[in-house]
Image 1 (cartoon, rainbow, N blue to C red):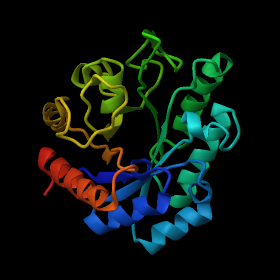
Image 2 (cartoon, helix red, strand yellow; image 1 turned 60 degrees about the vertical axis):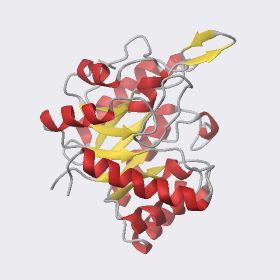
Image 3 (cartoon, one colour; image 1 turned 90 degrees about the vertical axis):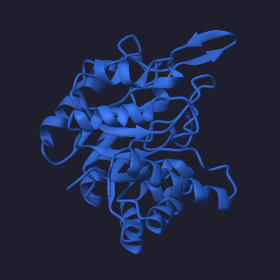
Image 4 (spheres, helix red, strand yellow; image 1 turned 135 degrees about the horizontal axis):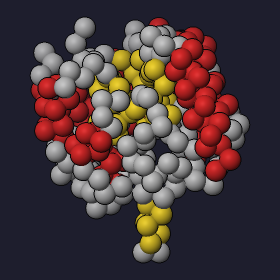
Amino acid sequence: MGLEVIFSTSSVFPNTELGFKLAQEFGYDGVELMVNHERRSQSIDAVNDMRKAYDMPVTAIHVPCLVISQPVWGWSPQVKLQKSVDMAVEVGARTVVVHPPFRWQREHAEPFKALVAELGQKYEGVIEVTVENMYSAEKFGRKVEPYLFHEDPALSDFEHLCLDTSHAAAARRDPIELYRQMNGRVRHLHLSDSTSTRGDEHLPPGMGTLPLQELADLLIEDGFTGDIVLEVATGKLPESTRHRVAAECLEWTRKAFKKD
């Protein structure tokens, strides 16, 4: 099987079903489900219903890690991760994507690392738990690091990683250099563009300044076998524009990764 191009429901946050609909309409290979405050995204039965209704596999589950989804499934990063893995098992997903805990959750740093390792061993060959690189923010002219492990951009404590290109840009890092620092541990790719000047933008590929084609070439050269997930902010766009962007993102990615 070649590289698969996946549509993230976070692209149309918080409308989970619309993510399935667009993925089916334009011929994506699957859906990455972002668990959020929308009830259906939290329900295994509802997710399975959408998966069957749109004949669209759920290839990955994204843990509810956003600031807006902090109350979803409780406040513990470990509980959220465990419930996401449980959902992945029930809906047939092969990947779970998780953010590091927030910086103010310092007491969770070691338990989080331990659980990621434990789940990796328990589900080896079935589900990969991938930890995602995160971004910096600016407030009152000062740089703010919202997440733990920010002092180690390559997340060296974790075996499997998700590389998010927009997050790299928002942290003022070259995504290619960061990929190289991750040293063969990237198993999952969140693909979007950025101008590297306005925070976490998640633009359609080709709409920013990131070297995404060069990154694609490097991934192919390295024999990357993970999923390529379009995580592009379209939720506030008009419906006609949103549909066009979803189609163009798929076309760009298939061409960039030479997927016929």
